[in-house]
Length: 536
Image (cartoon, rainbow, N blue to C red):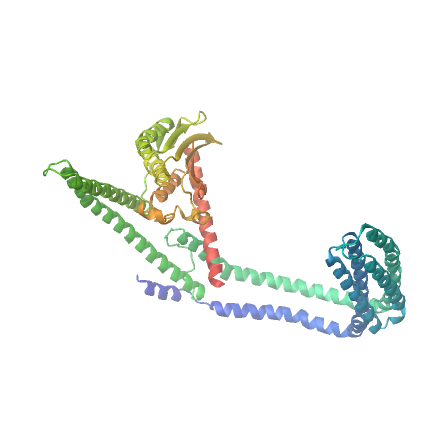
């Protein structure tokens, strides 16, 4: 059945209101829920209007001003003490002046709210404090040519601060008397307000309980009909983002609203991606197989000509034939890597899991690259610690050629003459750890998260040194063993790749399962992040 016909059938199988209507209905219900207690609150507010007017316009404002006045005095006291200790820091003096100015403003507010009489002592006390502070400022003024007060000036200022500090302390009693006057006037109004509030609280509690029941019912309904399918879509989109193009069967394709449209569109998109991925894999497989034959023919004929089968070859022609054979070898390697990548993407990477003898693996690696190291004048070491296990489960050929071979070849490419490449193996916490360390150019930090991506190459010089597939293949093979491949690098200092392989088959299966879960989680996080970015 075609996708359009399937969509029509899915719509016919489901009848119900659309997502837009659901949202509107939800908004209406929530609005009604909010309106009922709001109307009740307005009715109660009318009864409290007279009390609230007095408490807000006079008592509330007066008490707030009193609190800010007290805070201003405390700030002025603290900043004045700091200013005397470090008069070079003028920020303390500025903060003190600002706090005193704010205290003056709060006393003016007390006057306007009808508490001028009880605030008069506070005004007098503030004036005395300001007079004492002014005297301290004069004492701390540097005598030219000095740029800071002398020790005698600081001592005199400290002595002069003692009576000022005493006045700050006496202000607390004045503030308490003003607060008591405001409290007494508010007490009578508060008694009446409490009675009204008690009745309102009881009625509001009943209304809130009722609203909570309705809200829970709406939340359950919304979760079942909207949030749950959205969460399912997000999960399967994350799987598609991670490269799994399997059409899910439990999405709400039959719904006639927008969720159903999204589900059907997602199903169609996933099928198309699966078809395209299959076509790509088939094309890669066919093309790489077809390319191998002419490349081998070119290399073979070049070798025959170079050996003199078709006549004598001069030195210039011999150099050209050597270049042809080298490029044919590079093309063969690239085609092999493309074929491996296509198999990996198609899920066809087969691993022949046997017991790999670790010291034999390291010996073969050493024999393979020793000649190349001597040719490039690179100090090449292969070290196997005594703690290393005798065997590990794995595919020996792939571990040797596609993992260690690619990593070591990569190290040789970017390590200059007189540099060093070290391969070391050891056991750590039940894992076989192998590191490949070089003293090459290193990898910039911003490029390190991408080095295992297909066709990604570090720096401009890498373009002439491969197709950017070796690290991708090594990464996939290590993951196929239930292991991990990580990188650490500092530009100009070199690069270290570390491989961790499980020591038992059971551990390999468990590690591979855990790894697949982490990959799914990362894909889900990436999909969520891309969704947020598209919205912003």
